[in-house]
Image (cartoon, rainbow, N blue to C red; front, side, top):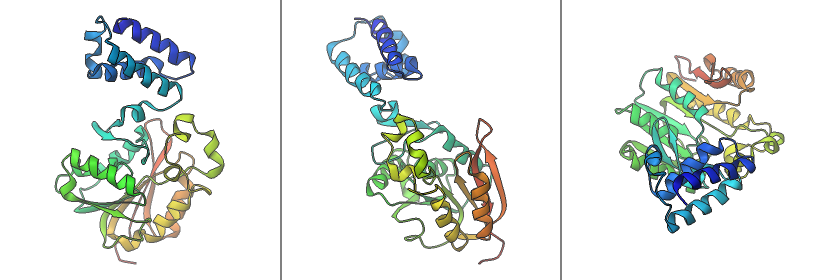
Length: 281
């Protein structure tokens, strides 16, 4: 069987299994099975698929048929132009989270920032790579997540400027920061069953939901924000697209000001930005 024949059969197979984007997923998996960069696959499709590559391809297709995301099968995800290791310990980075990066980069480069609930480290590592003079602190409750963040920070050459801390929100954090960022768990408990099987079945549940109304993390972050921001410092959090007004209200009650709800690439509410007052609490 040639690569072309294998690709055609795999695309049809994934489509029958109800996989959206079957053709693109099949190409990504075939390139991986053949040990090729995805943009080089077309040049090799006329070649016969060797038995080892065919076996690898079959194993990956079976996993994708079971709704396992391509990023988890490959063990990596592209985010803001960089590859990040993804394991079962961490949330698979989403394109929507790049909106948080874009909003952060619109403001001044901080001397030091804090990333709460870092997961893969994609937010902290990206900001450190974009701001070569900044230092960062990234926290997570999960030891496995901190290991993944360390691997990604090392891969992208920013580990020397990043401190990783095991912490439940601000519990293990000291000091003040020019910027606080977070993509916290914001799915309400009663919404979990509505998620796509790729998400519900493969992302860590504690990274998806607070087990309550989806706003618990924002309340915890708001309670500690002013005490950990320098006067005039910024805070940016990713939100669910229907949570803008609720999170803005939580931040206002905590004494944060200049609150804005920012849209994602589809025009839906995605980031809430606020500022610490110019005086300390």
